[in-house]
Image (cartoon, rainbow, N blue to C red; front, side, top):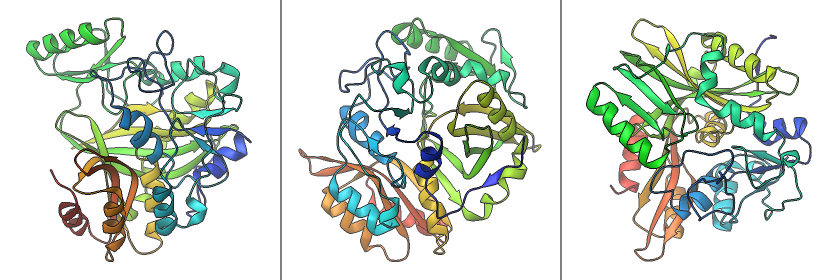
Length: 384
């Protein structure tokens, strides 16, 4: 494989996709296999392992889809079931510049689509990566066939280990099993919610010192464009909830993780995938690296990474991204508070107002020269 190419900070993700899939629209909405709060249903095919109870309407239609539009650019149209709030688009323009703000159009089934996950409700020929291929590549089962170091896959549950539903996402459907009780609880939940799901079991990696999310673009010709990396954040239930950016780490990524990047890119290219790729790599106390996840799509941290790259050129080199935060005020008050911060870049990636109690749930990031300052800003802004 040729050398890994670095992507200019001034360039957007939409430019990469427009070169490989001219006229295709980015559909930023996941389908659901257990919720009626979306028009994109995968009830009988391409089952996605949603949580139970299913994601709320606000997450499916607003928070999730809209935050993936942030820092996308204008070279490919974006679409979703619900239009992004004009106040959000105006905020992005003020924070990032108009060239980073996407052009949104109402969903039109006659278009071709860049998808986050294969869609049963769209004709296969309208999805730039065939949904059969895309579904296979989204399975946790394929990871063991990528030719790089990784946790050993087990034929059955042997504690301590990790069990994953084949098509879970954002840490959903992941189970850490250290004893018979953990296994029993996992079996009970899976039988109740996804009795037909494939479960992939692997060894538990101990003494982890870093969980790194790497982002690159795989061109149609198989060449690789390096975008950057973040350190992953997970909540107490082991669900992904954000990331951390440091400008000083970005240049070292392609060389440090070269074997992981090239092996994943080669495998995906051989199986007819092109587009954004996110992989997760664990590093243990001995410096050994393990590939633990491969996501052939925009991931939750992609917009934060692209925005952070631009902020770093202005001297804001350290950033934190947090998903699903509660702000004790309206959307207007949230944008006012975010833009009143003068010693950092406080970016609202998406937001949804609760009319009943006057609060706003949001995905947001804070970027400055110091992570301690970022934490203090977040503490002032967000309620528990």
